[in-house]
Amino acid sequence: MDLRVFRYRGFTGSFLMSMVIGAGVFASTYITPLYFQQVLGESAASAGLMLMPAGLAMAFTFPVAGHLTDRFPETRIMAAGLVLFIFNMALMAGANLGTSAVWLVWWTLLGRVGLGLMMPPSSTGALGLLPPGLIPQGSGIFNFGRQIGGALGVTLCALCIQFFSESFAQDRPAASAAQAFESGFDMAFLLLLAIFVVALLPLRSMQQGMRHLGEQHMNKTGNDKPDILVIGAGAIGSFYGAILKRAGCSVSVVLRSDYDAVKANGFRFTSPLGELSWTPDQVYQPGDTPDDIQIMCCCASRSCQVWTGLNWCARGLGSTRVWC
Image 1 (tube, rainbow, N blue to C red):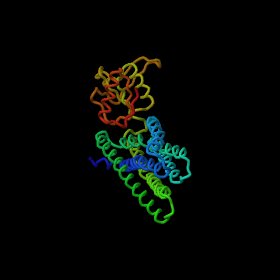
Image 2: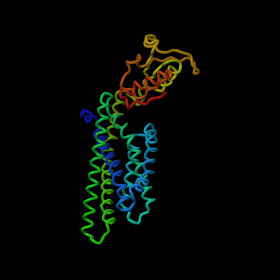
Image 3: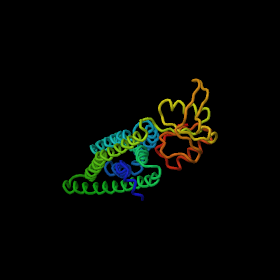
Image 4: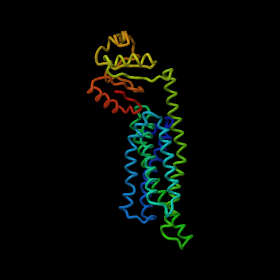
């Protein structure tokens, strides 16, 4: 593992968030069906069916979370997921033997939606804090943190259930096994609740790292306008570039032809807005593109779009937004 990734502000918080999310996913998956079986007396098959709605809800939440990540700060979406999961754990800890199984299914579904909201933005936010050259190493360390968190979460919850269940049975010999187990599971749910409340601190660190990265970019460019790379500056690309340039953006282009002419004289053409002329900040040829672009505007042919997108992804530019 390349530990240089921890030198970048906010990545340590992202790593800790990865551990917390791993603990939430694996530990809740471990203890919830056991709760249904040992406290409610359900069979293994029934417990699995009771978890099915929550699993489906989590699966449907992933694309929604990815869609929201393109429009809102990652930490804001993760904070919403944290609140939902904390609420789920509080409800589960407050349940008793008389609580309806229908309510337990709905509460579990709520927690799974919360986890689904946290996982995609946590990955994109963490990798966006790193330079392109360290993204592969950062991805491996981030996933390692999730697995370690999952292992620790399951272990701590199992020990918590065993200790408090045995303590309850010793203090109240007349109590049933279901009541003893309920006491242990309640403490396990409270343990996960406490872990996710404490996770607000690394989430704050992650937010500060992302804000610091934005300030660095503003200091580099001298304004808050994004760096845009236009792929394929033909009739459409050159027009888009002119509009973006007028808006104050830093616009560079990638050309397969007319490279020397555009580099020397810029663009001049007739458009619906009249005569337009503009000069790109930088002119590149395919294969010679920069690593620090915020937005890539792809105006080339369909085959070129596919090739360019694959090439960009292969280079690990996870923080670049792509328009086609």
